[in-house]
View 1 (cartoon, helix red, strand yellow):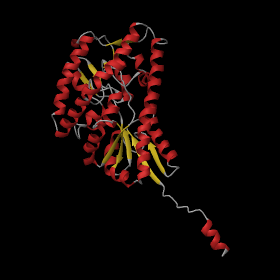
View 2: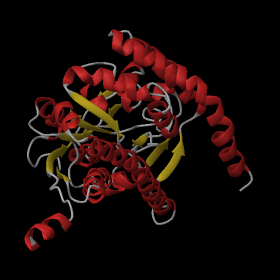
View 3: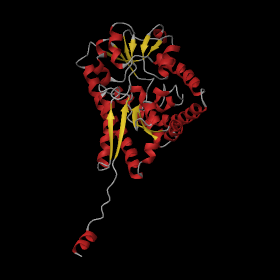
Length: 351
């Protein structure tokens, strides 16, 4: 009876199953900011689940080549990945909009489109045939226009220019402007620019560009990054693995991804500010931080409109996503101009 009483009085503890996922990223360890965001997701999930849910994060190249992670997650070889949606536009042209498009929305606009507009719903629809559930990750934006060995004064200065630029519509715009877009891995950009194999290169922004040493290869550092104004990276989860999670862990994962958007953006904002300060002080006289002339920007925007139109007409999904994106940008654009653009212009003019 004493034993029975003890059993009745014991707390009703039910062992919770532990879930272990594997995530591979498209980033090498050198990309500390982006790789750090993936690691933050894993830590947040483990901490908030009390250890019930763990994600082991591997940098690109450790368990598979960086750009194999999408297909691996589709097939269920891994449970999750982190990359950028525009890496996969050969599979579906609509993916371009989920990362960024030239002269598109800024970071705040992209986040609003995903969470308050149709962006995330359309993204899920576009990824469903690939057995994936997408979530926006950090936005490494705004970016810079890149490093140039010569000054850019007119659109004609792009003619014959070999420009290293990542995947995306920006490269097609340079091609139409008379240049040649060249895709070179991050580790090879420095050598290519230093040896004159290319004439210009864009990477990300001050923090990551200084880490590559690009300040030693070209003098003229141009802004703004018109080609990737609201660049947003992604988390992709295998659909079966995601839907197999208990509802509380599914929500834990979703909220952890959203937290990574905020924390990652704050981290990136500070790192870029520190790097820019270094350029304008320690590297002053060696590096020129320059704004692209207004006439050049107007010409680039005109060419971009043609390139985007062509991309949007390639599939019905691209057409649908483009229509949603364009409508939402028209909604938030005037507010951005009044709330942010005009403010920063005014502050600069009275400094």
